[in-house]
Image (tube, rainbow, N blue to C red; front, top):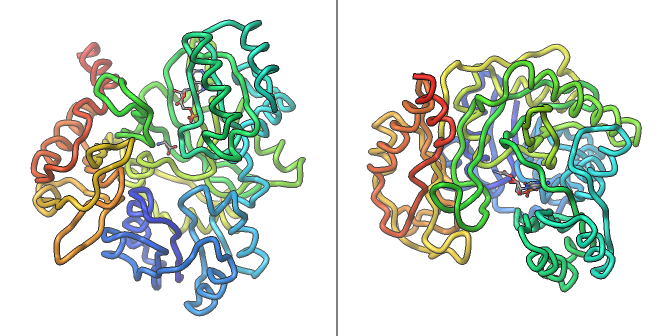
Length: 426
Ligand code: AMP
Ligand code: GLY
């Protein structure tokens, strides 16, 4: 089977690494890819917004399956164009990708299907949104409706913060994404990420993880795309997984099918867990990054069998088995991230970290004059496994310390909640 992988982050490096282990694989191509992905795939430079060019590439390389990593090409309809050309694709249609592309769309679906989530209202102007905030009080959550690269959410602790966030949205801080605003109830509890592979009809549970969104130790500082993750998430017990499938995932699959937009690809539910059970914070229509890295470390089965089953309606015939070990990944980012990251700094020691037993997934890297250099915000994902979170954490940081990159930084406490929980049990 010839495969084209779309994307260039740590998520896609982890997918490429796992796809390359499949006995079913013929040739693997990646567009645009990165130096880590290049170990497993032929890289192709192509404009991903030119869907006809992607279709032509698939024909030229006799591609049997396209795996789309990031959300933007999905919301933009790449899967629709490929499907119309008869090319099998892992990833939802543009209409189904609205689950991530429009927070209002998802909230309305939750309301119709009685899915547990924060109470909300949708607004298209600031005065009405502010009046609603006044009636609700703080804390309260303000969200730009559309894709805002993870930056469109403000958890406002004061009325002033809430009003500023509303003004930012309507004054264009997030472009078109902020033309509509969702104001929602502030939820408390513990967050977890839950993944399902979907084929339009069947949803197959596909692992749990916890991410660390804030840039600083102890969950302080601004939000990022994710500074580290581990899997499984101990908070997601078998009972909670069953409850999430019954109350959240299955009604979503039914609701999407009823709308004529059956969901296929990976459905990533951001959950808040409290004593009453799971509530949906948001959906993403792609693997989490860096959550995918830890899922791929733990998956025992052939990822290509699973992705092609999802792409062709065959999920009810397959299952996924996982290692009992915990996998943990530490994101190394360029100084300045999540603001403007410093580019071009030289990275050494990746081979030493891998010789130490870790797997280092690349994100924003390039090779320049024979040296590995940083080109983006999140740059490396140093990933290790162990029989518990403490062991995986110690191994990951031992490998981080072998990487010589003065222009980079990482959090030193990835997994802290789970480690504290393990220590309490000791
Ligand atoms: P999102 O970009 O939608 O994942 O939101 C970013 C983060 O904001 C989430 O991971 C939560 O920590 C927080 N958040 C979003 N919605 C809520 C909510 N209704 N209540 C409390 N925290 C929230
Ligand atoms: N790590 C969070 C995300 O991928 O959205």
